[in-house]
Image (cartoon, rainbow over all chains, first blue to last red; front, side, top):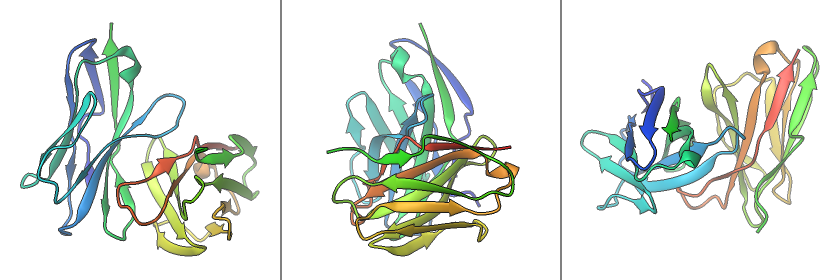
Length: 113
Length: 113
């Protein structure tokens, strides 16, 4: 089974609107971390936000927030007030303690002026 | 602090040749992970080194190997290159203890002809 599933290959959002990128994960380990990375066309992976499996509150970092629903095993990324510079590939990832990172296939986000 | 650096940034090789890629982690980081990114397979984990020892290994053939030096710099070697090895190879570093910390380099884009 896939460890990380991103079902939206491509998304479009109007500038200044909010957008939600979906991510579901699969693990039987009670201790894990969930991550979102942004990859612009330059290729470099940029860390956006982290959520620990034991964290009670949803993580937020500026315009990014992670909607963590543990029972559903989902970790959706919400970007508020989209900007043109947000156009990029977005990857959801998970890491179990002592294990490797698993990445989803990514969602291509295009922000429309 | 300087970020993760990877050399070379671009490389063109011929099928059957071998190649060595280099990664210098952030100062103080002892863990280096390598990933292969292709349009078809997404981001796949190759291996992780921590304090000169391989800590995790992905599902890649033995043609892919790596090592880490005492200064934490890491090299990745691919022998007998195949066309399918054309990819962006990303290196990431962390201090090896925090589950949420992983910083990526700009990547090496390898083209095999």
